Image (cartoon, rainbow, N blue to C red; front, side, top):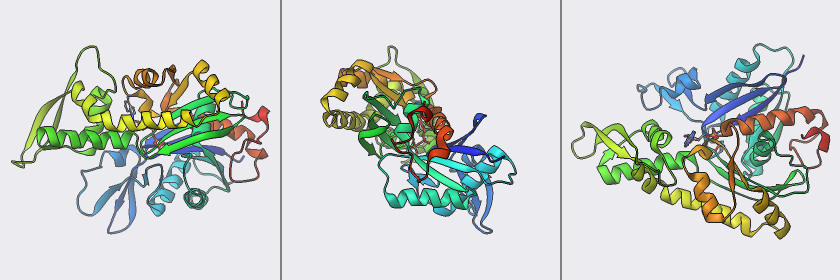
Length: 340
Ligand SMILES: Nc1ncnc2c1ncn2[C@@H]1O[C@H](COP(=O)(O)OP(=O)(O)OP(=O)(O)O)[C@@H](O)[C@H]1O
């Protein structure tokens, strides 16, 4: 039997949904390559552990940047590896739905379709992330009711208003989890004269990162290199430091939400204020972000259950009506009964 697969091809992680089984794989979007032989040494979690720790001949690469393919060849090999890991050896090539950020260009979309085809898909369909996120979170997107989704991933934040199965207004910015990590690194460099790695910055964000004051200040130790002496040191960083470090990129996300709200037709805006805003993606888990956005917009904000896998689950649900699609884009015209 032919397998149908949904792939959330993210900047930070790849999730694979197999029809009839659910999400079977969730791994970091990292690939380790031996530069001398061009051989693929590790993919996913194993490769992530190598980030920043590789000798000269090995490079650990994140082939997706800002929500789109930055290294085509490596992305193709990564998709191929994950498809095989998810469904094993296959006789009939799988049909694949891949989700992409709402703002990407036709050329970027083509690159995703091409990479998926080269990786073994017989046919590839594209679905926009906010649509997949909403479906995955259980929203009936086919109703003539406005729903706002904020999907904060590693590379992009997508803010979209959906009604009748389509995107009415949206904006996608390249500010999300990765940018937060960079802001944390910059802050630590400036305040403590210390350089920390990409992974340490993420660890700080996951442990004490915050968008809103915590009731009680929290602390975490981090190791890095003193920029003056060049020697390794350990410092104690606080949740208040995180608040300062993340202020700017979070403000940009809030500004984007405001812009989308301003452009939303009044009826749909009224629906959104009644129903609240839905937040998905790993970034939705940042402490206090829901509270801050709610305070700044006056609209309640709900975090989806299991926000990291909403997009993959939505892509999986979209597999139910794959046979009704004849183009490469999942469109609003898809029959209603196949969307729920
Ligand atoms: N508890 C948490 N607090 C803050 N950030 C988190 C938390 N858990 C995960 N993240 C961040 O969420 C981001 C990954 O989210 P997700 O897996 O939804 O992204 P993605 O789909 O790979 O990216 P994109 O959609 O941009 O291509 C990472 O930056 C990660 O550090």
